[in-house]
Length: 540
Ligand code: NA7
Image (cartoon, rainbow, N blue to C red; front, side, top):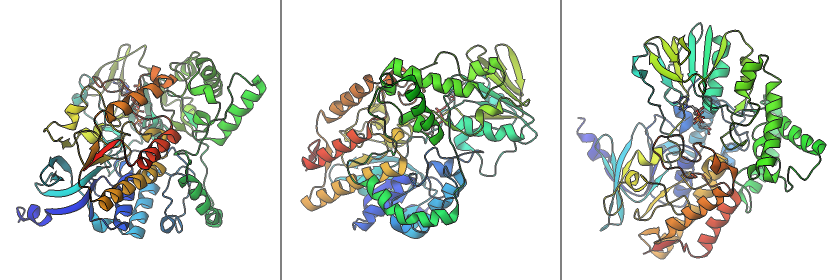
């Protein structure tokens, strides 16, 4: 009987975790090891978080392995990657391997969505509502909902009228969507749009790419990995991960050089840029000169290198100017660069057309295509690669209420404030990992999951040892951290550009920096807080 299920499942835990991506799974693993009664609730049908949800053609990670994996030896010992930047299917296989090795699914409810949570002050515990009507209670609630969970679909006039298949990249049907022999439109040229374009260009009879802002896509320098070599390289992995995990280890494996781009000769500068370019991945973004992120003139030298390399690949000069404008549309690197393999080459193909939405904006989606100011583009399939309500969307989608009954969504309606990007005052015993105002999109996901996750596990151990049943940020702690994040951002070029880092991709969302841009400083702040007896929090 359907009515029996909620009663069967109603149960009490030390900790309930929401979300089975890198953060949530690690947290489950580490807290179980430390003897907590912990359960994980996941809306999807399996582990993997964004990798479970994003099934669009070409989906691939932009961080290379072995960086993009757990440092847990039982997990890495027998796992062999096939590519330097693995695709979505391989990453989903990896998550199943993680689950097999660590036996995580025994403590996970899949296909189960948390809809709401409220705090019981008498019991110092969260009451957690599930979509099917069941309730769980837990002393601590840890939200690991990821930074790119809630798709953003722009309010394009007539969107519902399109008669063909129309999907957001993060809601791609698991059975797939036929693109071969079709006329395909892709709106959006961020990381997801670039990846879809590379695949669609190979099979579509016609591909129309609708670009609003040029993406500064960087060469991935993808390569296949030789399994024998990978097996032999395992002997070094323990050291690689030890460096990653021991302070002051960065949450990213790419470091800037000390000197200014303007303090070296032209020849030396070009050599540095060329080396980073050839290294691939994000090296050109984060691994060149110290001042590229903070000084406009230095930044321009990086942009010019990128522009010239990119334009050299595009045959038509008008298309080249739209893709890689003479003058930067924004300081280089202040919107997230995508990684590409043959993105720019696609525009040399006769079946691929680029539409510059700055000069010819979309006026309407029609039953058969996209009407722009100067043309109607007939399409069979429409792909919305339009991004996410990033950083906060996954958290505010849950109706989680503070001790006065106010929701987190209301609390953050005029702007986000947190303590260490991990907690909010008024919400006792609630934590979020990989959340707003922590390094999140500026760090390597698995590294961040482990470093933040260990810190939180240590905090829970401390509470358990001291017999503390309630913890929340000290009055003023949220404001202090928010002011600090804003000040760090204000000193960087980052804050000048409208991007999802700045919460500026969603109409009405308050513009503020939502990712903390210095991983090492963040780890130091965590360590200092712990060393001072968690002084940013009230424990009782
Ligand atoms: P992004 O990086 O947010 O990209 C979204 C793209 O969609 C971007 O090019 C936007 O242009 C474009 N967009 C958004 N709204 C519109 C409208 N109304 N009209 C035209 N174009 C629009 O999302 P991704 O999914 O590519 O990547 C998200 C991250 O997830 C990625 O970086 C990885 O870390 C994982 P804009 O630049 O705003 O002009």
